[in-house]
Image (cartoon, rainbow, N blue to C red; front, side, top):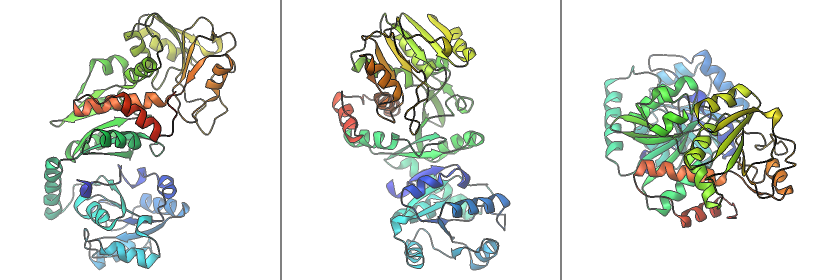
Length: 435
């Protein structure tokens, strides 16, 4: 299965995170032409492709066309681009990549193959030891040979023993999810792969449809698509319906079922810290992102009351209107007194804005209050520092990331995944102290 698996997924070339590739050591992009850059029937690069090529160059990356097409087809397409090119590349045979390495003076590890076909572009890259990005084909105007090949691809993937899982969002390059799930699969001896897929809002329906037919068994969703993904799913769990957002999808028998593990993951973090939820008074800053899931989970675990503070009071009120025992207040009226648990669910303070905090002071908070910031980069946020200065226990969101991920794996594999020893190993390999 690894031979058939790309390093990354993207909906199209325009969704590829070029800076992330460069930061990962890539110097050369090897580009397929048909149904990767343009539809098969399109004979020359479009204006959009030309602009993207210039964007790649602005990032300091070299480009080369690598096509199984004839010399005439490649030369005609390349007339306006004037790039280096390899025609009749005979992908998936790896010799074209050795040729690129020699011609451009780069190591194979510095080459990234971008294409739409698994059997040619991805297998060729894997045989050559080159990283790859699989994009969705731009059209269905393909010859009978290619259509037949795609049918075989689907059959082979479905029969393979390894499963593929993804994270879709925008951006995703910063995500630690591949590390997290990779540790889980190694620990439990699960034959699976986890990849990142950078996409755009207008491509969500297309990419979900393609996932159903390319061997992807499930995927996570991160910002900004946790609500937007819902219309493209076939079914929601009751929790996901109540919360109004989805962070995990399982694909089974061609149907997509949406789950939300954010709230339960956060509750598991609190319980692992011996933080008492039942009967607690909770104050929560922020009304977007994971806030509804956290509110739902805390109420399910017996929280006595929750006050949601937000700069836009209407958004906080929208949460209060949906759940019992929840009140809404403008952030300008925030007061940290009389609470057992205080949570920041906003992105204020996320790296590189390390010195920012959603509130300027926590004066008056009880030293017995338990304080949480769902941000995990930096490891100690400005908000956490304010809490510790008042003598409070304060934690970041690293364990939330871990527990929601473990719960997603339990959804996908239908078995118990979460173990204390596994959580400790993940924390260690992520470089996070287990406090």
